[in-house]
Length: 164
Picture 1 (cartoon, one colour):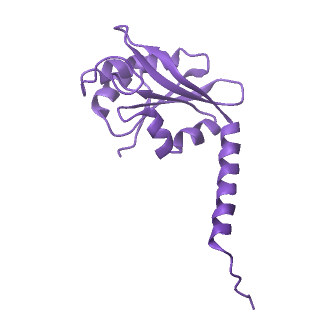
Picture 2: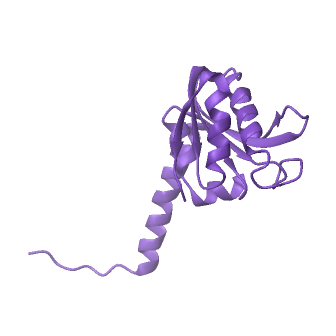
Picture 3: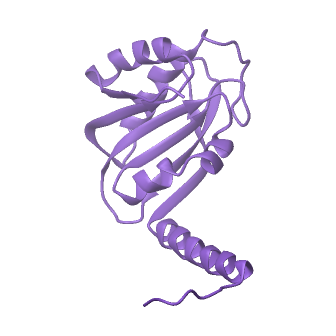
């Protein structure tokens, strides 16, 4: 027979916190983060992106995520980016034009196609990218315009859509 053991709730929370910190630390040790990298658009406006890379040297397929909701906020809400980098993907998380760290004026849907295209071209030209192994991952905002830009970039790229 098993015997019930009472464990104070504070002890359970403490152990859970330690385990979560160790998992997060192990994951962050496998990921290199470059903050607020400048990505220049064709009209000279600079958009800012964070780039997450696997810690291992090499070339990687890249996921591009552009958001009007703040790239820093995306980290706190999603663990997808660090998990993808830890599993061998380069991840580019960018604030769209005129939002948060990016320059320019935010006019919804006006620049998404061109800026998405320019960002994909920039990502494809980076030393960490494995050839044309480019995937655009996008959630929520202006998928139509963004995917239209992606279709022409680098002869086309795989697009994954996650509608939030």
